[in-house]
Amino acid sequence: MSHVFLYALVGVGLFTLGLYTLIVCAHLLRKILAINVMGSGVFLLLVALGGRTPGAIPDPVPHAMVITGIVVAVSATALALALMLRVRAETGRPRLPEERLK
Amino acid sequence: MTRVVEKQTLFRWLLVALLSLLAVGLGYAVLSLPTQTPGLSDFVTENIETSGARNPVTAVLLNFRGYDTLLEMGVLLLALLGVWSLSSAPEQSEASPGPVLDMLSRLLVPLLILVAGYLLWVGARAPGGAFQAGAVLGAAGVLLLLVGWRPGARFSGLPLRITLVMGLGAFVAVGLVLILVGRRLLEYPPPFAAALILLIEAAATLSIGITLAALFLGGRPEERPQR
Image (cartoon, rainbow over all chains, first blue to last red; front, top):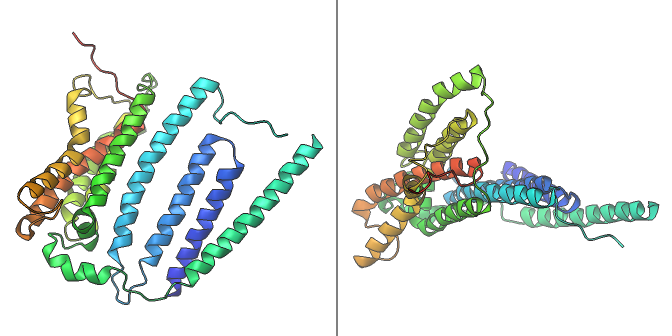
């Protein structure tokens, strides 16, 4: 049973790690990758917590939600990459215009 | 200048502290969950006979929570619309893909299509289903795009668009027909459930695969100019 919580905690760790990169890095590609890492953490957490059933068969509902989530994450990533390319084409830099630190 | 650097270091440490706090909180929340819970698996096991699929994940995806999957097909389509509205497909580079990639794609693409068909069929009773099959089909499309293949102008107009909306279309059509015959949205009558699920999954597989490959193309494919 402890396996479930090990995987779930790794999921929490991935989520936090992704959030850190999302905040710290200005490069948009890194931000997109960070959001993907965060999403993977959430998926890992969901799948792990679905394994807490008393029998051998895990709970299928979180698994189905994760399958749905993966496809949505892939398509959202594609849209984000297209937006990033557009930002680079417009401003010449793959990052959002910054407000100056005072 | 040093003031700014110091400020940034301070900000980072503050962030690390805050995020550690968040991680500890989340970890505590996870660990305080009950170690054993049936969740919704009992409901699924009880009703799986009437769902039309023996694989519980497929039963949840296409029957019990079919609404989710329907909307998700819509999300895929919206993402593609977004990508298409941002730019048209980049110019095809003239660089040759090299003999290895060329040969590999010739060997792999038919195999990938076969695997996609198998995954679609086996999804009714074992791990597999429309999403997995669609992803494999999408990979075949990506491989073809990598070696420089582009859909002919004849296919990138209406036929491509019809294939893209087919998954969502089949889903909505089945849902509407079921409403018209007096059932609720996506409440399949048990005798036809298996056939309806296979129909929707087949359409969804094609749509997902083609959508993923089209997303990889990164823009609206060139169309033949109207004459």
